[in-house]
Image (tube, rainbow, N blue to C red; front, side, top):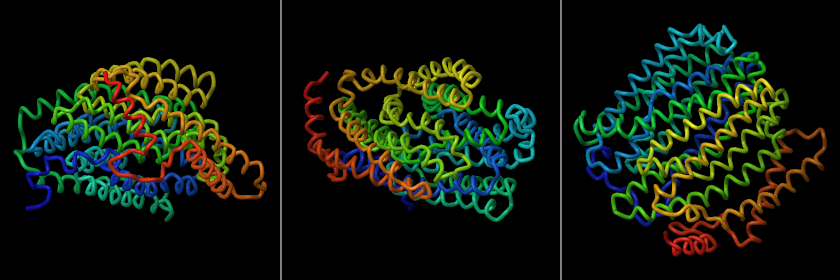
Length: 510
């Protein structure tokens, strides 16, 4: 019998006492490797393509990502909720795979039938020739979405980690080799289509045969839809809202200028590689606590996640904002230096990433409140983006996005105390959050010092490396002066400073 078919797959796969971060570690390591692999894709293509072609490539990616996040409608995320609670997870998996196949086919039809309209809307008629291949890419990508999600939900984080790395290796090769070999943007899009089809086949082969239970179960499908519809409706608002600023900028500028904007809003993978697995494991662990009748302990898990994330995200955000010209010049060449102000605004959202609120609410089945927060963001985004781009150009576009994200996060946090059965002041390690902030502010001296002393002839990549090292040494030294040793690993526990704070907050009780 294969490992996937063993009955104990539905049971918790990790000891209950194991810490949240320890359980997330395989996924964090995999996301780190995957981020390093995927990181080369835009950097390589920005060097191979002229701005017009690179802008067209980013427009194609914008179309694909909008459909990829919009059409699954919350069904794949429902696996995080139902699989840990079920001893026969197969119907949940099969029903999700069937739905996603239909969603991918819908995306393909939309691109094939509406390609000319989409290309005109993005101010680039040349996109029409690439959309047939893009439609295949989107179909395969949507259909294979559960590949890693189902493994994570079953507690097989090691296998999920392997899947992330192997998939991203194949994706990077498919998207960069055609460009490097001189096949142009057409070759890159064809490589994307081939990769997505292979990933889809691997997903079906793994999950259709591996889990116990019937292929279809009416009650399970009804429960999945009840869970997914509010979340899916929220995503239907969130995805257009989050991408709206890019659509507005693209429709008002040439592909070459959109290339500059796309570089500025480049997503630094260091945030996602820690946030996403932490949020996913938080969802699974809260579900296990609920099953064991220990929901009140979820607030402590949330505090742990916030504190750990803050020690990484607060210094990373300040470093990237301070060293924006060096980051852009080193990664995308000096051709795109004018994107640095846009990049500063975009990475400021890293502070909001310290709060994995969405994962905690999903774990408690509070998806309707995610919908309401996304509705609020959608309402404010449209006027902010239209006015911002018209009045302030590209900076107005990214500024409208950041303002909407802050508003949505605040709305979600207002609901979290009730979902976790505690008070708002007990959800955050308030004193603990001051330490990374103070240490990161002090470390900025390293960035500005290196910039002032570096010769003008020194390559920006070298300047960035020296500034990062100086910043890191000062940050760790400042934390040590504050009594924090973030590099000291103690599984199942926090550091002494963090433990004292958690104990104090827990004893206050609601």
